[in-house]
Image (cartoon, rainbow, N blue to C red):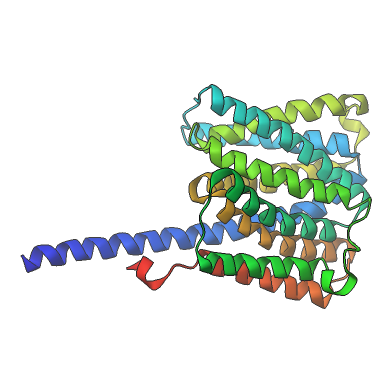
Length: 313
């Protein structure tokens, strides 16, 4: 009997160890993906400077849509959903096209590091509130503490303790719109996860986004390849494949697997990539408050995903 109990105990310990390893891999890949998402803010500003918001928005998701098709086929993703699931996809596609335009329009007016910081700091907070209101999400006191640290870090990043609400101006309205729209998209992706494979969901959302953005880009001759220089094409290719296909697909999948409120916390990492890359490319200043805010964001992510000792046993 003791041998049998020991065998079960060993199996449970092995499963717990495997789960811990899987969680560690998820966290590492998610951090890398979010850093690339941060780089996309600077790359997006470069693309917008060499074209316009409408054309850049169209090609970003057109490339993402084309590049994700082989991934879906390679993974043998089931291409099926029900009517409600399809409606979620359409809604997410429409909202993503809006986010896409606001992204490039905002970068045409403002700084890449500032935009990446504002959007990715506010979106998790809004996502958390929407998850409670719409999904009835329950969180532990430890996770509330982690989110509080993240909120405090966001306030430091936005320099609210020093400059008040000076960041609320006309140009910033694009970035504020991005944060609100993306929070809603995150919640929709969690609800859609119960009705379709998340890779299929991402494929359809990318396709709908591409079509809608194409309609608005047509007056600017998006298929006149000679009208845009080499810098634009290489930059938009990077945004479409790496931050677009890789990071966005991973974000959608994670939202459906671990919950929109938990995935949203990872967006606190994005400002690091946005600030560092914008500093390198545009020599945008890196204030001490920005550094402190980013460190608090990292701390929030680690604390939010940390398991209690009793949970690991």
